[in-house]
Length: 533
Ligand code: C2E
Ligand code: CA
Ligand code: CA
Image (cartoon, helix red, strand yellow):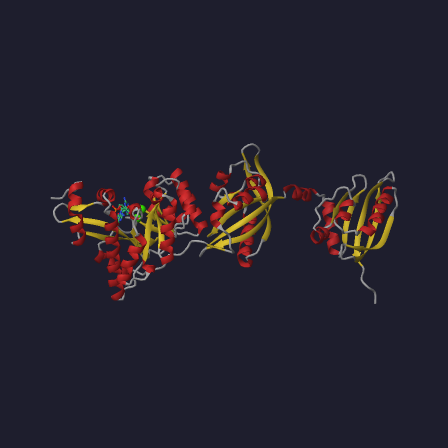
């Protein structure tokens, strides 16, 4: 007669059933979706009563928990798993790590870690084959208690997996405060709603986990669509009916013998000693700095040509002139604003940043769509640094400056001016134009490149003096030259030691006048003084 047992029936026969092996473990594989290989398994409790048939965990586990019997049951399953692993090892099968479930009642007034260690010792199973799954609800009894148990587990070498992540209360806090090694994200809590809020939650968790360097296993994956979605956001480990239902011990053993296995890898290897955990903590100093004290900045990943923005600050959004919210920027495809040539420049810079592991810069034009102003073009100077990497994915930090105004000035230069700038480039001198009435100076390309000058300097010659191009002891003389030019002096020249290095240059000015003979422009040049032999 197959039926669900009553509470009293369960309690009456529990001990005998455990001893006689009617309460036992089945094994559900955990798979790498990319390779199809098995990376581990979870032991799940089953109760097959000789008279009443199969009983299900959702029915009998709450009863065991309520009557303080779950501890016995969990240790029973742990022992079966150890016995099974011992057999495999003795038979020359290399097993995958197997996780067992720890009930939150296993830690109240119980020496859980001590007890499982005794069992493990009895079967002499290396700890690397044993993972422990804990749930967020274990924190209900107090964060200290759970933290203490996790510390004990870690000190013995157990890998701890956070089960049913996202189902409980204050998941993010739990994640921040608990040192778990693997996160299990249950698709069923997100009710197939991949396109909507559920998808956003999943992708945020996966991204955050990447930052913490914690692998994520998607649980309860039933469809290829779900599996592909998880893969697309960087979660490749899957446990669910799509790949395998829980298997009886014999079937599972055969699967282990046949299947190639592979170890689970942390998804992102952070470069240097960045504390990623702190970065996601809204109250940390790192967050404070990111939000307030740096310019526009973003964190993004790059994989197979795709860019994905994980995090930005407000200044970033403002700098690239987008009237979107930070959240909208994170959801959009950054390449949309690049044309082919600018994308090539940007990707080339990413490649350099990967190669040099140093800061690399580039300037790229982007087309932005503004709700208020329609389409516009902006030029962004980016300072890019790789801060983490996985197999074929890199994590970048980019600081941005909007240099559109600077660039446009440059573009608006008259053709003649442009020719002038190129010409001086050719003849190996530094040259500039000085507009007498406006006191504006326009340097040649060589000046801009070597002396880092902008295309236009106002209130000339003061900026050149301030920058130390003309040294302090020549400042008054140089100012006086500009007064003389104003008064119509046609030609000025002298040897002046330029820049803080005091390199001698032959500096000349030639004045240009309008038809009425009024001073209009002066053409300056500086040629290196070469010692004559
Ligand atoms: P859990 O730890 O989240 O285990 C995963 C559950 O999801 C298992 O149910 C598994 O059979 C089921 N599952 C796996 N893939 C899929 C899928 O693609 N679709 C659907 N709909 N379900 C899937 P099960 O074995 O009935 O266990 C239910 C719960 O009972 C477990 O949830 C766990 O909380 C608890 N449990 C099971 N075994 C033990 C144990 O040994 N000790 C303790 N304390 N609790 C256990
Ligand atoms: Ca579990
Ligand atoms: Ca679970």
